Length: 132
Image (cartoon, rainbow, N blue to C red; front, side, top):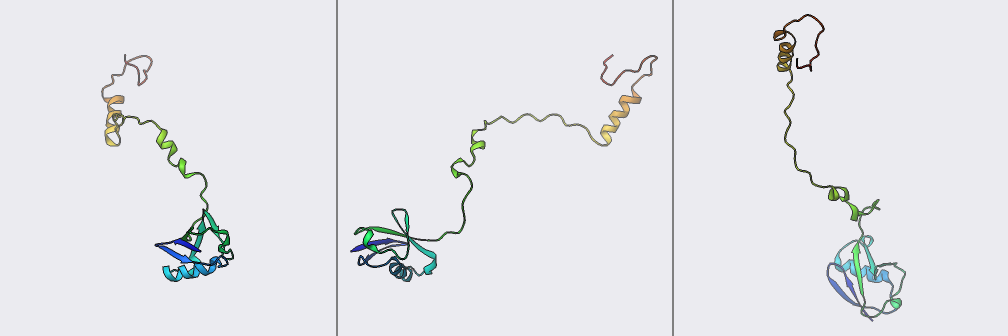
């Protein structure tokens, strides 16, 4: 029987039904020039163990040879990444408000308000927000 192994290139191999996956993996590692520990086979989305024979795999099937990837499980679905930013409405930028005076300028305005322009009158003292 004949199978196809899809790695960096597609390799066609003639195998017996009693041939083990480990033997084919060694051949592909030699052809692809990669370490045998880094390569694993999948057929129809299911990983193939080394002790499985090819009698359960039909003739002219394609087996995917791929390398192992580092990493672990990701918490949450990546399909929802950026969900909040995507559904937040765009708001136009507001005009800048007049900024408060600080330092020497603020003290100058404070002095003028309290002492320089005020005329001392008799009676009750008026607050800073009174307009009379």
